[in-house]
Length: 73
Image 1 (tube, rainbow, N blue to C red):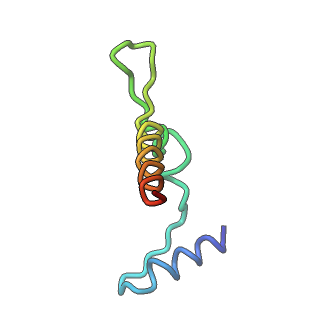
Image 2 (image 1 turned 120 degrees about the vertical axis):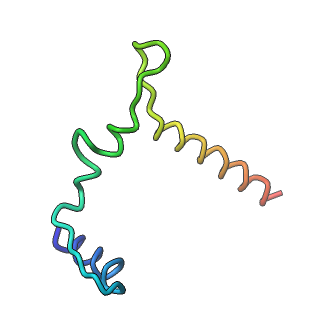
């Protein structure tokens, strides 16, 4: 955890005049208010959960695979 905090500080905060260390860098990644939990929503059928983060990941993968194939040709 210390190494991650120092890496974050050296990469993002050191160039700024306002130095601000994050006490919990994982607060937006784990828990009820995490990015993954907030990306879930009910589909039109209330029994189905839709994960928009997973959907956008698949869209991105498809687009980059398509671009790589076009560059190879």
